[in-house]
Length: 123
Image 1: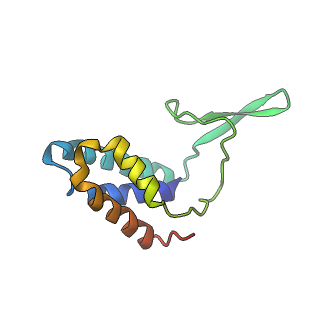
Image 2: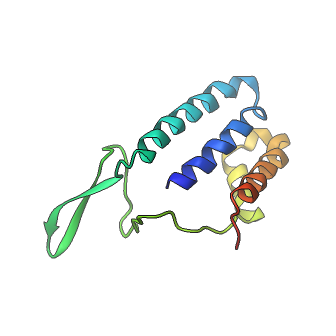
Image 3: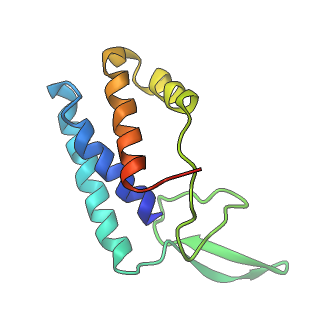
């Protein structure tokens, strides 16, 4: 989780220079929120605690009440290795979330590839 947050933070820091000035406030707010969340995570703050048992299974409650933990979500003590995103995954995200900014798609792809290379994310 921490590694993903660091990657997202790094990408946002770069992306803020690719987005129009009207969008920079939102990007800067996201950067600030990620920096604060990372500071808490790096202090060793847990993301969830076991609150008991019910029907022979553990009951897990997130420490952040706004967090939704999906059913069957695996919780790890260490970050798990991940594979790089495919061009199709990046394109699908950009088409769904950044439809009005098609001129920036290549910029965003380069940022993703640069971030993955910097953090040695391999297949």
